[in-house]
Image (cartoon, rainbow, N blue to C red):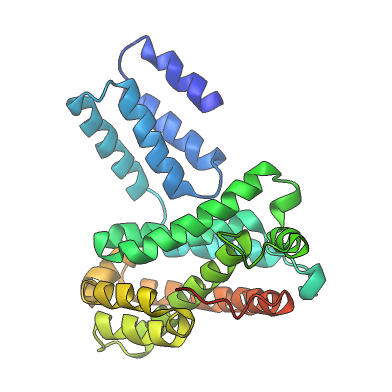
Length: 284
């Protein structure tokens, strides 16, 4: 609401200048709900509306938002920070009924994967759409009661008790598939580190085969096969992951740190899924 009021105050001057935009952008970064990518697109739409879709001003908005995004840390470094926070928030005995998955940090990590897919472009639309929809589903329930659902496991408990965990577009299913998407992410990064001469297409396919494929039905598998033919080459993908003024050694270190932090989180997630008997869910 504060953001809306701020933007409305700018209508009277008929133009949102660069300084105004930076304040609004930082406001959204600091206070938005977990799905930052979604909120950023919503912000762009709001700004377009308030400049009456004037093409010149829209170009300024796009240019400034891009510049401010580029000033931020790389997705890997940001994910490392979020994972470190998750680990700090985990109880010592993070098992079964007393398990704790901090909702906001977990969704932020998933959101950072979406940002990488956005940079790759439309070739990754299949993966991006799936992850984003699952993030939004969890985010919606979280926003209904942030205090109660600060622990994502409470969402699973609620749906299991109500008998809805395996029915329709449930939050339980969203958590299952986000966990599996992160399994795929870890497998891919590990493979890129281990087999540096391997093509990106081969690395993605092999990582998919050992993580997502066993749980995908034929429709999902066909969609992925099409996407595999369009993945970027190794150099392009490396440049996407790499922060400005960073070399490959720095990136390799970040990848290893990311994997080492995420793996125990995923182990806990899978333990939780087994406890609630959600680990066998498959897609069409």
